[in-house]
Amino acid sequence: MSAIQFRDIEKQFTPESVVVAIDRLEIPAGQFVSLVGPSGCGKSTLLRMVAGVDDPSRGEVTLSDSEHSQCAFVFQDANLIPWRTAQENVRLPLELRGPVTAEQRRTIDQAIEMVGLRKEDFRKFPRMLSGGMRMRVSLARAMVTQPNVLLLDEPFAALDDLLRNQLNEQLLELWYQQNWTSLFVTHNVPEAVFLSQRILVMHARPGRIVADLEVPFEYPRKPLLRNDPDFARFCGEVIAKLAGVTLV
Ligand SMILES: Nc1ncnc2c1ncn2[C@@H]1O[C@H](COP(=O)(O)OP(=O)(O)OP(=O)(O)O)[C@@H](O)[C@H]1O
Image 1 (cartoon, protein in one colour):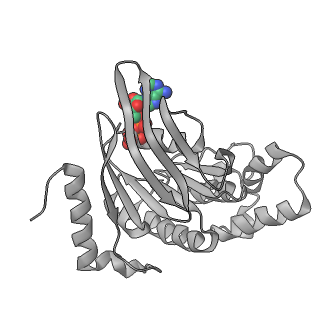
Image 2 (cartoon, helix red, strand yellow):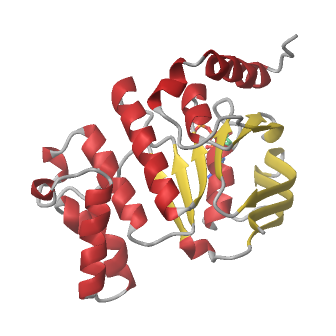
C-alpha cells in the first residue's frame, strides 16, 4: 500500500506561475526516497504539502495510513530553543501535546541515546553542542513523536563531509529500526544514492519529476560502498538526469 499519493497536483503561489506540477506519484510505506533537483524546483514545497503545512492549489496529497500530523520534519537548521537543554528540546513536541508521562520520558532518553549522544550531553544547552550534535538533537526531537513519515530537508548540508557520512550511516540504522517512510531532500548526489531505495530527479519551471530511479544497492549499506565503481557510475547517471543529458 502507498503511504503517500500525489494525484494531479499543482502548487501556485501566484496566479502566473506553477511552482510544482505532479501528475501521479506513489510512495510505498517504509520506502526511503530522495529528491534531488536545482534550487527553486519545489523540493521543499513538495515536502510541505506532504506535511500538510502547504495545500496544493489543485489535486490532493493523500497519506493512506497516517495523518499529516504523523509526519515529522528535520531541517538544515536544527532550530533548537537556546534556553532549553538538549533533553528539554527533545521533550518539546510531547509537551505541546499534553503532560509528559513517565513512559514518554523514557522514550525521550532512548531517542537521545539512539542518535548517538551521551548521557552527559542531555543537560547541555545548544550553544554547548557542536553542529553535528545539534543535528542529532533535532533528529531525536523528530523521533519522539513516533512519526510514520519522516521529512528531511537538507538536514546535513551544513556539516563537513566526514560528519555528514557518519550521520548518513546512523540515519540508515535508525531507518532500519523505525521503518519510517522517508523523504530526503539533498543537493548531494552521493548522499542521495548512499541512503535511498529510490531517487526522484526534479527539474524547474514548473517543478516536476523527470526521472524516477531505483537505486540498485543492497542494504545494509557499508561505508565502503562509496568507493565502489558501480556507486560512482550510478551517481553519474543521476547527475546526467539532473543535467538533462543522456549517457551513452
Ligand atoms: N510562500 C511562498 N510564497 C511565494 N513563493 C514561494 C513560497 N515558497 C516557495 N516559493 C517559491 O516556490 C519555488 C520553489 O521553492 P522551494 O523552496 O520549494 O524550492 P527548493 O527546490 O526546495 O529550493 P532549494 O533547493 O533552494 O531549497 C521557488 O521559486 C520559491 O521562490
